[in-house]
Image (cartoon, rainbow, N blue to C red; front, side):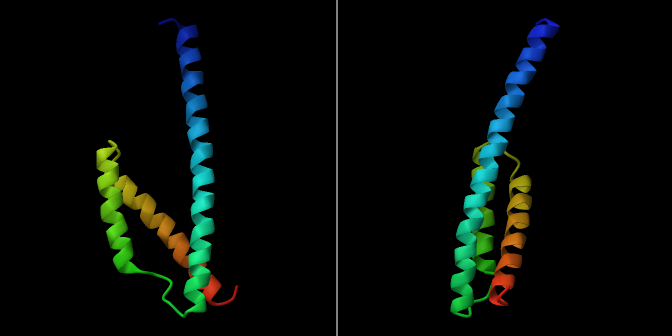
Length: 98
C-alpha cells in the first residue's frame, strides 16, 4: 500500500468513526430524553431516583452484550455506570424542582 493509499484509507476510516460518533451523540440525547421523563414520573410519585436492582440487571445484560460484540465488558460497565450517575443526578434535580 502506498502512502497515498494509506492516507485515503485513514480518511475513509475516520469518516466512518465521525459518523458513528454522531450517531452515538444522537442516541445518548434520545436516551436522556427518556430518562428525563422517568425522572419526572419518579418525582411525581415520590419514587427513589436510583434503582440499584435495575442497575445491576442492566450491568449484567450490557456486559453480556459487550462480550457478544467483542467489546470489553469492563468498558461497557464503566460507560453504563457513568451514564447512570448522570441520570440519577438529573432525577435528583427534577425531584427538587430544579
